[in-house]
Length: 427
Ligand code: ADP
Image 1 (cartoon, rainbow, N blue to C red):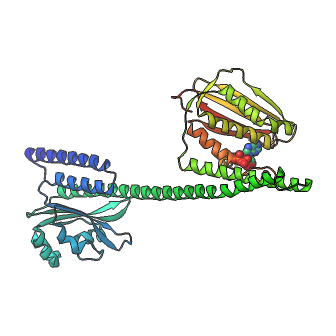
Image 2 (spheres, rainbow, N blue to C red):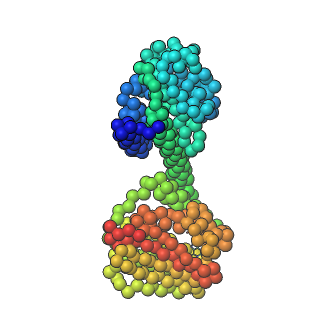
């Protein structure tokens, strides 16, 4: 049977109103980030969709999947639901039945309740409700709960109304699931941050506790060596020097661990200012030239522009460059070559430290930036703890730059420090 023109116009109007309500609901729910926001938005949406509604209720499957928990209730006297806060999925009640079957339940009047749920009539009269539409909440193909919309007058729910309630439920379900995942992720992140903070605190305390006796060991060894406690034989002096070398090694290790935990905890402060690169490089060369001479390495600097400035923390820039130069020295055999090259473009400056050392396999180029990673060939043979590169890269990134590595095993490696030249430039 075709609708009359008047009926057709009315159904067009209904369809339009319904589409508008659904759109409004989508917008509300899309901006709901927390579980509380989703329940508020759903309750408001239920009222907009059914202006004569007396209240709504959302039940969610419990973590063990065997029960339903009342998650949110609007405009319903709370004490009525005290006995119903948590109930079995097998309960003979509409909120549980829709979760079991996946079908919408429409109860038009107390007569329907009497037929299907006679044991719930006392609850019905306590709430003052007469009709109810109950829909399953389906998200990702799973029924995660149910939504009940209650009315204090008898109703004859139309197919359109049932459809609107289903659309409302499915949007609510998706938003609930999204908010649940978001909340889980937030909790996991908070737990990880707390664990990380505890680790950093522990490292900082441990390093502090180790430093005091270590300084005492170094101090006493110095006093013995200068003869304060009597004459020192050549053999004793050699042993004292070994004690001092080991003491310095452990002190270096503790400082690196402490610095790394400070970086990880986000406690490192950066004082970013224009820094003259030439001056900084000269200081780094002075600091590393004794090791270069000791190993008979050939060092060359390729930089013509003496005025280049980078936007950096001068102390941290120096620390990075000394680390890259020291590594080049450590991992290059005597008589090898090391070069430092500076390049700049309008936004960034690149400082490349290249060597003719052992080189690094391509598969290890990312790995060496991980804390405590030392490649097999360097462990035991060369002094170090595997924190120089992770610290240097973190510092470079903290200054809006980066460090990258290229290498050819047997030929050599090039480590490139990239830093912005101006406050606003990014790499
Ligand atoms: P460390 O030098 O204390 O071991 P780093 O974090 O500075 O720690 O370096 C990590 C590892 O990367 C080193 O153990 C070494 O195996 C490798 N590496 C670093 N620089 C070079 C280089 N210039 N040539 C070859 N290998 C290098």
